[in-house]
Length: 319
Image (cartoon, rainbow, N blue to C red; front, side, top):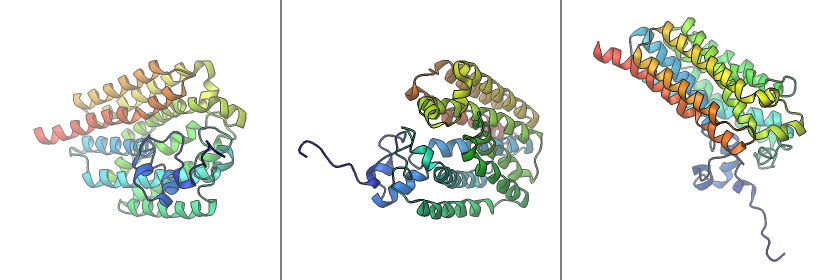
């Protein structure tokens, strides 16, 4: 009919919450775009949030050992985070494709929108997992075992939103795993600072993913999807504030137990201040602001990493 236009072909359909004007939508080969979207390459905040605890842990290990963060480890964690974030997202989308079709924000994802078949997505999942395995095999034997153990919470997370009111806790177990990896990669064992950092990172993940879930409260209720945002209800801001306060406190204790100095604690303070700012700015009914605050956790994490890494480096440089 005159005045109407045909919908764009599948490879031209971006996902609802992708970064506007991302290179995936502008420069990637058209047939590759649905797969890059399936791996969340157009939403880099996911791999940043998976990567940053690895870098924090590597920096704490450097502080404890009197060295600088191992640059090879930092680079391997970067590649591994991108690959495993993509693999986890692909697995999650395969498991959730029917639920995603019922939620406004997620129905444009490659699987529910028909851009990618489930069989092809499974093959893509295997390819990404092999990249992650190749990275993991570069570490010591204990780190390899710890890394493999991370697959347990990853495997069960997509199904938790159907059976528990706080699936973000299981997501926290998975996304915080990097807090263990940097330490065990350096020392071949897990000590108190790593476990304290892991606990603090879980609280951080629950806080920021609750903010993320604010976008979907109404649709989740219709689809029967459970989330911490729905569970907290009118106590949403107080609950997120409590998660963030616990995260900052546990990270501070982890830094103390690793022997961090003033620069490291300055990073912890900046991290805590950023989390407090997010809590104050949150508006329960404002999905757009919730997405902005969620994405800002990359900056919060980089502040903490900068403080810890600089603390380690100054100890070496000053001697």
